[in-house]
Amino acid sequence: FVEKTNPRTIRAMINLEMLGRPEKENCFIVSFRNNAIRKMLNHSLDNYGDSAAKNFFINDPYPDEDLSRRSDHYPFAVKIKNAFTIMGSSPADIYYHSVNDEYQTIDFDFLLKSTRLIAVACEQFTK
Image 1 (spheres, rainbow, N blue to C red):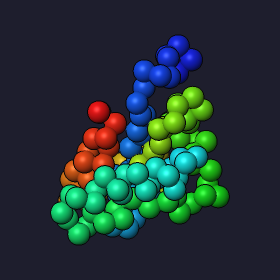
Image 2 (cartoon, helix red, strand yellow):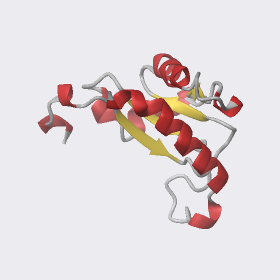
Image 3 (tube, rainbow, N blue to C red):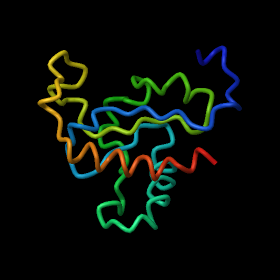
Image 4 (cartoon, one colour):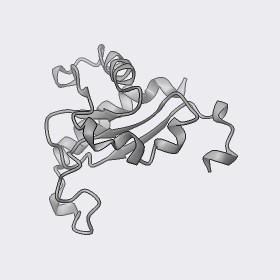
């Protein structure tokens, strides 16, 4: 798909991983541009009015896992600026890429919170 797509037509590629299995009270960014994307997303939340939104996005705490190259956003990241993954759980989570990842294991409160904050933060890519 990426090879046949004009990268100038894509504003962002956002991959979401394990949002229902939070490790902490925030999500982390997996990207070659971790710091820049984190700052950009958090800045979008500055006026959100929810104290939980402050610094909601953090840098990848697992750099040794090389998630940037292993993630579904990688083929896009090679060609476009704003390609990244937002992840809620550790790559060591017992349900990560597991057939046992069922709805009973999901923290729906965090899933709702993170989905709302991600939607607000990523709205900038629709303009």
